[in-house]
Amino acid sequence: MTTPISGEGGVDAYARLAELGLTLPKVVPPLAAYVPAVQTGNYVYVSGQLPLVEGKLPHTGKVGAEVSAEQATELARLCALNGLAAIESLVGLGRVVKIVKVTGFVASAPGFTGQPAVINGASNLFGDVFGEQGRHARSAVGVSELPLGSPVEVEIIAEVQ
Picture 1: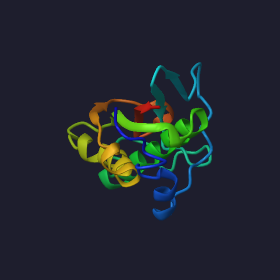
Picture 2: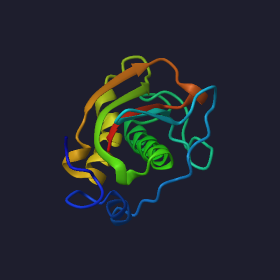
Picture 3: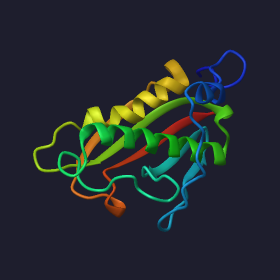
């Protein structure tokens, strides 16, 4: 078992968020029949998070067409922050031991192949907040459409104590 992210001996995720000038948003209400996050055993599975800010998407469309790769990278970072809010509301960031797996979906224009760089927006946030314990396995997948016309969506699996 790895060291908890918050608390004695671990990185204080709350302090790191403050140092980065970030605050956790309110949990995004589900858009359909699911919950934002669920715990089973020592794992929290976070539903796909869109880059919603106060209930709205800052950008819509396909990456490589209506949305630039740089904009999409920032949107992936917002998805990750929304995911942390879901974890916080369910168990608290202080119980997180490790970010285990991230799956990122990128609504991609034909020929766009930069999905890994886009999802780095989420991965880098986890590294910034959690240090080594934020390093994770990952998939970055190009898709034709995402809910509400979102350019990106991110799912998270976190180990908790």
